[in-house]
Amino acid sequence: MDDESWTRDGIRVRGGGPANGDGTGQPVLLLLHGLAANGAVWDGWRPVLQRHWPGRWLAPDLPGHGGSEPLDDYTFHTLATGVARILDPGQRLVVLGHSLGGVLGLALAGDGFTLPIEAVVGLGVKVAWREEELTRLAALAQRPVAWFDSRAEATARYLRISGLDGLLDPASPTVDAGLRSDDGRWRLALDPSAFAVGAPDMEGLLAGSRAEVTLARGERDQMVSREQLTRLVPAPVTLPGLGHNAHVEDPAAVFELLRPCLDGAGRP
Image (cartoon, rainbow, N blue to C red; front, top):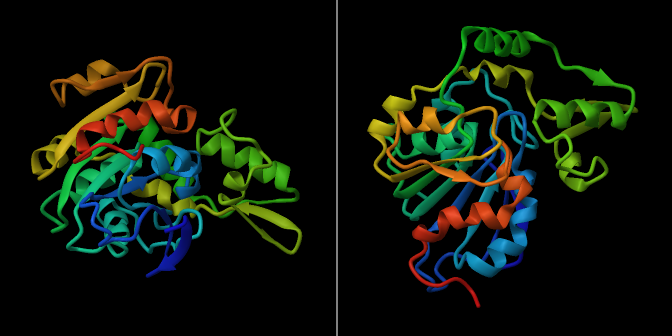
């Protein structure tokens, strides 16, 4: 099946790969983006997935991000519930989540859901939070939507707040997915209230996960250190030369984290 996009239960989804029931026997790969980004950040993965992932893949916009509808209240559980609505409850799953997406992958693999998730790879998950950081996020969540007089101004804000500055071409369709326009003015597609999600209980999420868990980070990631991850899991993975958005910088390198999840060889 060709790559496509659709909206289901208020969630915008990008997807591709062969249709379910094609005989591959492979799980669906669920790609979850980080806070303030959207599913378009996985656009650079299409060639890698086409070549190496034998099954289907899904890359939703999280609630309140991109083309997905906002929530009245943002918690890890409500965000995960929004994602769960697009999933077939009987379909085997592997989750690769970046930052917030990694937390949601763990939540989906926990007792609050009954999804058959076999593995969760959490990339660049921030696991240690200072009080001033949480205070800043709470303040961002209270701000009204900001409108800009030009796409360039809105783009600069989007790239900065999503951590993608310098990684994406400002003129690209991937950036367009993070913007909205109305009557000549521009805004971010992000609902500012999403910043209220807070800090995750990583110990509890890891203890409650029914899936195999891998935590990874880019070597240059300033959001999380290897030492912090080592306190949570015995063998975190460090990806040489990459930063917080390692999945955008080098899709092929990050895909290697998924190799143990494949039942068989990738496509030739």
